[in-house]
Length: 262
Image (tube, rainbow, N blue to C red; front, side):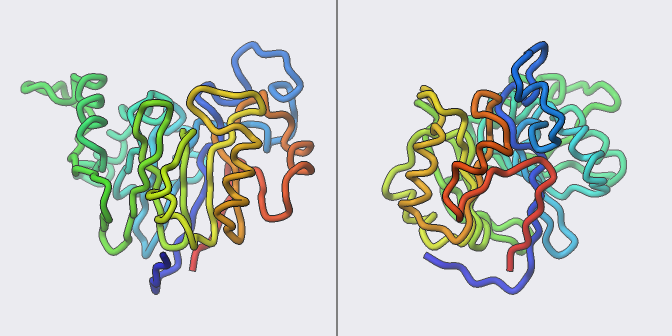
């Protein structure tokens, strides 16, 4: 499957860390104590820029810091992979864009994820709203092609243990986080991608994430031109050392990494 588009899209990795980020609070390990900026990992998220439109996939607890770091002045939509707090914990800071842009924030999420947001941020949805709370407008995200403005997002349903999670294909770029299983049917949506990003948590087995070796084997199967690993734990090792172990077409992503898609 291959998509043909005219516009150029820019991807920025806002965060590439696991649910606790790296460094982990109070951890004395060599990764958490590293002075290499590539070992400083905020919670996983990407920024997508296309024709003066700006979107993010996931808004975790580091959302505010990420937006300030990348100097994101406008934000057109938030697309959510799933409801875990490391992917939704920054929702309160959406209100800054409400104020600047004078409109609701468009949020694309499955019905289950919408219900979780309504539960976790109940004060946003009360009948009598406190002044200054975030204002959001939900759009239902299903496992079918979704076009936001003129950019196509193709959901890819993966499994995070027993929880369905959406990855996304945008042009020939596929982004998957929080997965440990992808069905053959969903893999067909990924095949032909020039760039694939996938989670690679650590070396040891994990109940809900691909391990380092599993992620490598998956990329060998799908054969992208370039692959990047994200959602990385401090347990994986130092960025500089791990890079040496990877096949030539695979790299570790890092916070601030930018990619251009034709």
